[in-house]
Length: 455
Image (tube, rainbow, N blue to C red; front, side, top):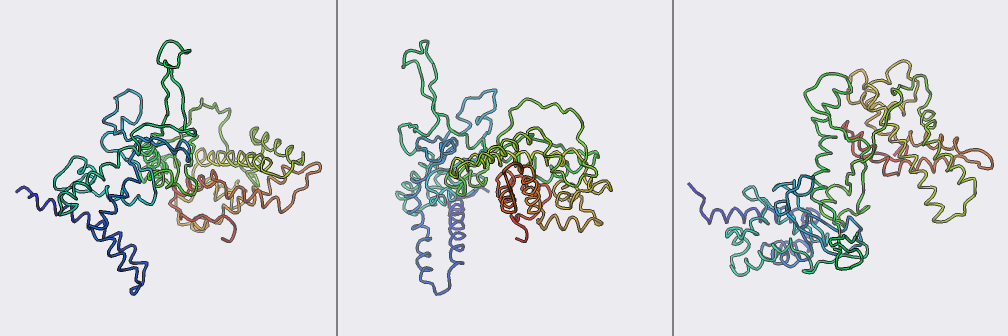
């Protein structure tokens, strides 16, 4: 028996009312029973009132697949909504490969993002916006009993995919390049001005796929099997030299909705020639600290030497000095995270249990996460300390003391103040934070990571 139009219309209305009820309850829970704002909120979230307001506010946002703000957060210009099905099919990887199941992004006023969440309400397996774009009579009629009003609201909601301006525009802060399409580079008319946009929907799919390969349960099982050198039916996918680009700083929602869902993180795949390894990576047996080996690296030694010479030159205090010094420290921290990953991938889980390992406990906890992943009953104390996450602060302290020793010499006198400065530089560094989050994702550790001892 087929569903009647009235039943189907009720289904749309029920989904809309459920959405509004959930948002209203979330706001009412924060108010006391006698708070006068309760009556005001009840009026605002009445379906007719909220939909009328949403139909006005929808003009403040735009659904896009290719956005401008990741190019520069202050750029103002055209964003585009180009569903994969409307794009030319090419052999190269691009947004056209996403298919019908792609994530649209939203740009504009972050305060109006609730309107987009409303348009994402799923009915019969498809978003409400899709039904409205197809002029589905039941979806439109569910907006209001007044047919004319319902149609006007539906048209307003469907405009969310249209650019804010009908005239394409770039911006002085956007990327622009002139592309020769004619034969004479001396003739202006033989050029097209190209304004590349960020493929937000494609970047989101890439982010989801890489995260699943790195932190999904099947990936964890396969990685555990690889560390233990045993057979496994799963597949391990690795992304060497993967970089993370941050958009939006502390307010990723100001860039776009999808960027906010990713916490501002966007992955960059390495495009580098392979490195030949001269010898097999070996465990640091009998070493009292791995920082000794770290400092022997040619790249690290070069950065330390440059930093020492810069500090010995007694540079004047100011912004340029701070940028130069912080840049060199960041290079050392980047090298430190790469250095640590060698221990994670090249050595078997539990290698620090060997009697030849003389490393301090903080370094063992840092460099042998596979030992924690194994969760052996007899290793409960070690695992417990890992999950307490006090060891990153210990590594920060060791890094500060090590760098002080490397920089001392001549007229350069360094003490506890400088060591604490280097420690804090490490613990607040974004690359170091990503390194800790990577370990946390592999071992399902707590989200909070202390940034100092005793925190």
